[in-house]
Image 1 (cartoon, rainbow, N blue to C red):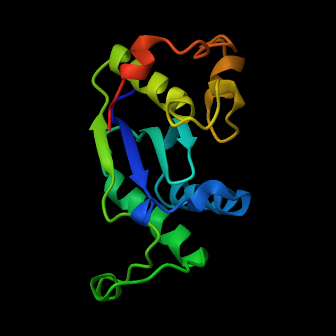
Image 2: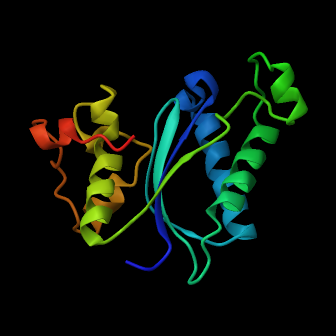
Amino acid sequence: MKSGTFFFTAVTYLRTPIFAGESAVELLEKSFQYAMNKRPFEIDAMVVLPDHLHCIWTLPENDFDFSVRWRLLKTSFSRAYVCTGAVTESMRKKKERGVWQRRFWEHAILNQQDYNRHCDYIHYNPVKHGLVSSPVDWRHSSFKKFVEEGLYPADWGQGVGKELLEMNLE
């Protein structure tokens, strides 16, 4: 694990299920690429659910400016995404489009155990929210990549272990 590794949660405005459609997920992927091209970082783990996403990023050595990266990503997505929701006067003044909640939640990863715990949380999240019965069944997740790399068995998260149900990082 490198220095400058962070866990994030970003949520859509009013928890609107924007990412329930494939086109929005594809647009999100392009927005990530845009942000990564402007300000490089690595996505270690990620899951995209209909109304929020969780991810772990590792930033370049001695670079801890994740806020500018989130601004680039959210702005890129918001400009390209056609939003039909109501935009308040406060949002209009801040040039917001009613796509994202204003803030994101971040946590600096402390050590390998903390990193592993957050990866588990990310990969189990679609099961936690009742979207699938097994992490391997959720398409928009880094879980399958972790399985291919031998970091998880393919049946990990099946049978709902009590420790995974109780895990709550939000």
